[in-house]
Length: 417
Image (cartoon, rainbow, N blue to C red; front, side, top):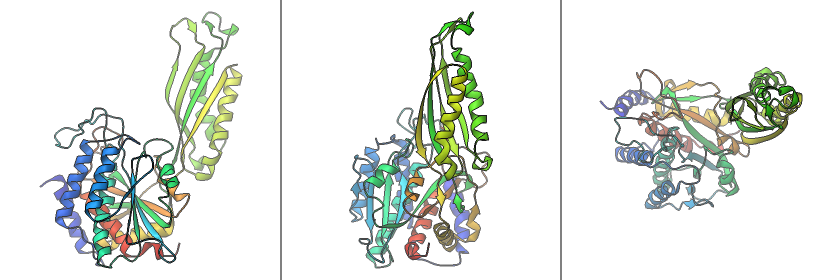
């Protein structure tokens, strides 16, 4: 039995015990088409704001279904409405997918859909997210044609999620939230079995920013560091002491952390260099502390630079705030999954330190993100996100489609926040 078939067999047995019935089951032919669509995307990954092939494929398929998708202003990504225009008493429920890939090689072996593009891979599951939203849109379009869709639904296929500060901000500028009352999304989770989802009220991801630091001094001979700025020592102190200083200047429960990924300085063992560069990320679990973080980080770096008489230049690049799930929308997803597949298909999940630009949508409208299980039940070990051997059990596509169609049909937008 195939990897996806095993999961389907187990999850479908769970679905038989689900407490409610809704229209909009995923037909076998469409399920097979969505798997093929996902595999095609997986073989042809595109980086952020370069997703022209992906956008064209989505546009063509939605148009074949009689829909009218609109490509976003930069030429990649698109938005598509189903079930009429929003209006008073008819707020839109938005379903969001991200469509870009990562600049890393695909190291999987033994699969026919391995990436054909060197140093590019869908190693975060965005191809799965895209297939889920496409499938939900096609099912809901059929239901809308039969008068069975209670409120309009909007499909958002967003580019450049992996590019700080994320493509969500550009999508919002292009009007994708106009008329939207609620927004939902899924993110692949290789720690959760296919056939299940993870949910959490409140923060489910962390904030993530980028930090770049330059340190400069006059340089000199390593025999006489007292006559110049000992720049390598200064850089080392920034690396080792800034994380501790930052952590002590905010509430420890906020989880504010600085982690360095690069340090570079000097060319010779007996020459004190004139320039050093450092870069890393800042992550934070709490949105209020995240808003204070630039000042805290700047202050800590400047103190150490001054101590070593080094000139500092700090480039603090805002990334994304935490994704904070609104309770009522989270409960909508819980109800939708329980209706389709039973309460046993839902598990609680913890807040992660990963960043996600879905958070920018939640600065404007209430919404929630679910963790979509992509691990084959019984599989040992975990192929983590952002690794070249990451893959997903494709039964997750069926589960994601069922989750979103049920959310639309039980009238999410009309529920009280």
